[in-house]
Amino acid sequence: MYLAEVIGDEARRIGVLGIGGGGDIVGAAHTYRRARVDLDPELLVLGGLTWERAVVDPEPGPRSRDEILGDVEWIHDRVGVLRGEARPRRGSEFAESRVRRVLRELGHSDVQVVLIDVGGGVEGTVDGLRALMDHFDLDVLIGVDVGGDALARGDEPGVESPLADSIMTCSLAKLEDTVLGVFGWGSDGELTREELRQRFSEIAAEGGYLGAVGLTRKDVEFLKLLVEEVETEASRIPLRAAEAGDLGPIEIRGGYRTVELGPASVCTFYFDPTAVARGSILCELVDGTCSVEEAHERVRSELGIKTELDWERERAER
Image (cartoon, rainbow, N blue to C red; front, side, top):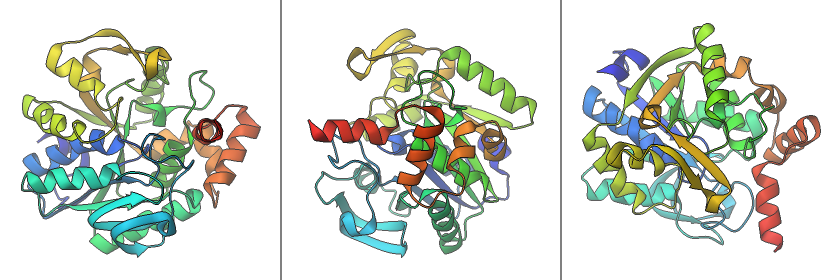
């Protein structure tokens, strides 16, 4: 019942979103399962972003509703509810669509699976998330990042994919009844263990740490079914720690990054998004943006760092 202490015993209609794009919905599924098993809620919504990895979608950036093919009911220009399979116009099936299929096979026919487009920057995303919460009458919305770069200030040397996380973190901070989760402490390799420790300390000092829930054996078996269907590296790594005790340094991204796995890697940590946003240069920069391009330009000009849009555009040009 630890999750109940984080989000409140009265929460009966719960939304859980992977906020970093790609396979973050798999990391979010840990919170989804704990909510389902521990709280027996009236309604569960699970989802993620329309921003896929290049191996799934070769077009840079998030997909808008006009660029998505499949069975989707749009409840807002930026929010779609999956009624069947869906994919980007030039790519393969969304991670959310694959997760929905696995959940249906497991008998989870009651869960609503959604797609969120962050192409409207913070302004558009806040509007979309508010519409999502109103449509399903949610008591709480939990955004889950895999790895922890959503906690980044923005001046850390390893930060290279800050847009989706900062747009979503800033958006969650502007809404009531929201929580920010981090699954797989450091498993994306962007923030070092010391940088994560420092950010945890800063956020906790402001009263922003809400609690943590670890992976059980049944959680691991559940998530293994999802990673068999979804292209994800960062969400898979915590399972190695939990299942095989595979701790210590591990190379990811073809040796480009190194992850230091430890016991914290098998937990989801929960924070108040307003406390996270207050200490984030990135959230300050993307606040008020009306497009992902505007957010990208602000981050590039002010911090001089590449974003995921840069990497995806470079790859698309090869």
